[in-house]
Every structure is written in C-alpha cells, then in structure tokens.
Amino acid sequence: MARLACFDLDNTLIDRDGAFLAWARWWVERAGLDVGAVEWLVAQDNGGFTPRGELFERFRERFGVAISVDEYDREHPSFAWVEPAVVEGLASLRTAGWRVVVVTNGGVVQQSRKLAHTGIADVVDHCCISEAVGVRKPDARIFAMAAEEVGASLEGGWMVGDHPAHDIAGGINAGLRTIRVGNRHSVDVPRADHQVESVVEAFPIILAGRPGLD
Image 1 (cartoon, rainbow, N blue to C red):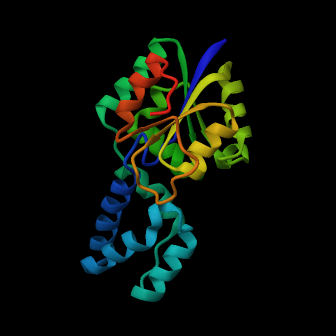
Image 2 (tube, one colour):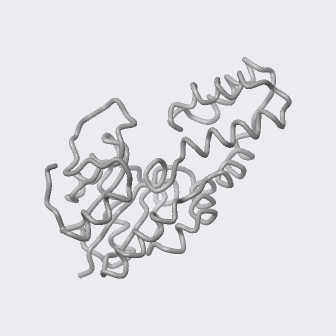
C-alpha cells in the first residue's frame, strides 16, 4: 500500500503569520486607522488561535470599527504565499511514490481558499480540513480519514507540522513519525522525531526514511 506524508498548512507549508500581518496592514490602511491598530491585531491574534469573532469584537470595542469574520475569511487567503522550494518538495514526494495530504484545522472557506490561492491544492493528493470532516487534530481519526481518502497506510507514514499539541501529538496518536517545523510555540511536548527550521528540510528526511530522534 502507498506511503502517507501528512503536512499541516498554517506556519508549516505557508507563513500564516506573515499573511496575517500583510492582511492587517492592508485592512487598517483601508479603514483609515494608524499603525497601532496593526500592532494590536498582531499582538492579539495569537497565531490564529484567538477565535475570530472574539478578536474582531475586541477590535471594535478598542478602535470603534467592525471587521466582518466572513469578509476576513474571503480576504485573508489572498495574502498567503508558498515558497517554490515547498512546491518542489511536495512534488518530489509524490514522484517518489508518497501520497501527500494536507491535514489542517480550520474552516472550509478560508483553508480552501489558501490552498487554491497558493497552488498547494494542485500539488498534493488530498486536503483534509477539520471543519469539513468534523474532527480536529490531535484526534487520530482525522489522519485515518486522510489515509483512507488516498488509499494509503498510516504505517510508516509521517506528520509534519509546527504545533506540538496539535500536529505532533496528532501524528503520534495516529502512529506516524513526526517532524516539527520551527520553534514558534512555547509548548515543547510531545517531542517530535525530528526538529527542523523550515519545512523544506523535512522533505529529504522523509525521502531518506530517517527514523530519528534528532
């Protein structure tokens, strides 16, 4: 059976925080506010983990201007980008016989738009979005669903992501080997099999079948 390589989307395959900053600058300038509103949004965003409704209600209370969650979900993805080396790495895995899947927590509208806008949707075998399947990382079932969708086995597979409590714990729960990207989150457990600075470094690890721990 085919081998499975799972990747988180935000702050793994793409710079989600960089895209949020670019969106915040654009939106604040359009609204006629000063740079302090950008700084506030970035500080309160918490890497996307602050619920959008809560974040934008607090923004309205602070600055007197409303931000629509629906409009944000449509606008923010257009500020996302993917490095060419990431696209090439995903393609190299598929060429080598891996089934490549994006497994992401988030809403269908925003995550689907990011995947389409960056072109990642075109270079992977499947995109599994938590809102669509009703299960979130670190629940092992979301990985089982992804594996079934592409006809791959969890055995011998990988999960690559930036968040220990979601991506790495989820991969471990599903019996996958794991690679943590970056050191963005203060939580350090559970420990991944490998730690890298960029997702680009994960591709040769998977292709080489290195067992880790690093």
